[in-house]
Image (cartoon, rainbow, N blue to C red; front, side, top):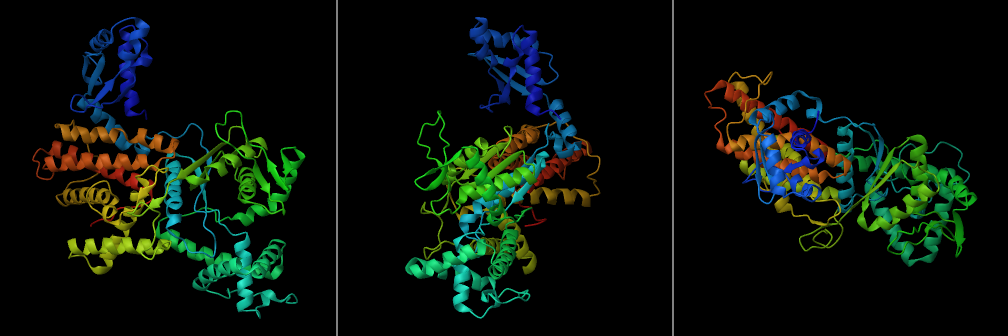
Amino acid sequence: MEKFLDLISGEMARGFEAAGYDGTLGRVTVSNRPDLCEYQCNGAMAGAKRYHKAPVVIAGEVAEKLADSAVFSEAAAVAPGFLNLKVKESFVRDYLAQMSGAEKFGLEAPEKKKTIVVDYGGPNVAKPLHVGHLRSAVIGESIKRICRYKGHHVIGDVHLGDWGLQMGLIITELKKRQPGLPYFDPDFAGEYPADAPFTVSELEEIYPTASAKSKEDPAYKQEALEATLRLQSGDRGYRALWKHIIDVSVADLKKNYGRLNVEFDLWKGESDADPLIPGMVAELKASGLAYESQGALVVDVKEDTDTKEMPPCIILKSDGAALYATTDLATIKDRMENLHADELIYLADKRQEMHFVQVFRVARKAGLVKPETELKYVGFGTMNGKDGKPFKTREGGVMRLEYLIRDIDEEMYRKVAESRHDLPEEEARQVARVIGLSAIKYGDLSNQAAKDYIFDIDRFTSFEGDTGPYILYTIVRIKSILAKYQEQGGSLEGLTFAEPSGSSEKDLMRQLCGFTAMMDSACEETAPHRVCAYIYDLSNAFNKFYHETKILTEEDPAKKEGWIALLWLTRRVLEDCIGVLGFSAPDRM
């Protein structure tokens, strides 16, 4: 289904051509002066120099050709050469009727369905999720859902940090505490226990303890390095213990990501890429791309167009150890060979931009990806407290993510309980969790990813303004009206749209008409904030219409049915939009 603005631009192009001008001058945009018109075209301004005519003359000639337009009820030329436009009510009505009956409201499937891998999450095992993990999870999940909604095959990968010194540190500390475990007995030949010798709480305490000890005691750190080497060399007992660490950590991670409504298709980690590193390094050496520099193995990635210093990408350190870049390159190799990816999207802190520039350039130079493979890095800003500094607990530490979710849920429960005394406590808490998730996700996603933002619980949990609860309140209000309409004997099947009879009704209809263009740009630009901006404007347009219209008491059945059709479509569009943002709406609140 063709986008609404494209249809209008097509009609304007015909007007330009009929007047003897190039049709490409007919591009139409939403008016930046809604008090004067609904849409505008500045093509006459652009064509003035080419045709040696005053722009207002060109605009006047085009307006004359559109006098009997099936699309425009008004096309007026105004100085110095703008075309002010209003669309016909019948044209908007017919477009919405078509949109309402179409799959995904007329959003066209991609010309080429791509396999896209989204790399987000990136937590280290044996450590609890903290607020620093929020943005990658929330933004990555939304990008995955938006691309799927568009019609692509999208694979989300958590990409665990599960293969490095932290593993050696945990194993070393466990050996100190429980030296009699069979994992440390080189002569043990039986089956290792099925259950881990620690709980997730114990595991979360072991790592920081071991890390602190390694910084103070060189001998302890050496033991940890040796344990890491034994693990990576395939020691049977250490591998079994490592698997326990992974299993216990992943179970806890799944629980906490589940609270955010974040799901991964793959639970792979750096360890999965490790076996691919020796062969990849050998290929880099054989091709001449990799060479030794001060004992390390590096690849030059500098390009003539660089405006700032671009150091070589280090593949192996002087002691032969791999780095994040090495693991990321091996992971790209794996994703290309086994997942046949057409596009790779990485979510990470924007301060890691240099890392990804280097990795992507090595991947292209080494032929790890095809020339047409898209490599995209979405760098996100910092979530800050009200003091403008990275979000911390009152004690100054990094807040665990589950505690942040708990605090939001409690604040929402307080508000729900105050306003809805009729709700049983269990239902009120469930409603609070649903609204709380919208507050967290919308609060994050409504900001452009690259920008830092202030995490303000009071503002994010408000039912007024540009917030998740406001969007949900709008949806619940529509649900309530539709339910009452059905109680009156009305049906939501086979509804017929009517021509808008007022400005607020038409504005709401026009907002709905912009859905497919918005979703296309959100997918193309990996920009969930565009979805947020759209549903905020749509909610505002609906609420203005609602306050000006007595919907359920309208006596004209055709007019009432037209309004109900409009509400039914508005609800469905809003619900699809919050679905791609990763949250849902309750039935009442």
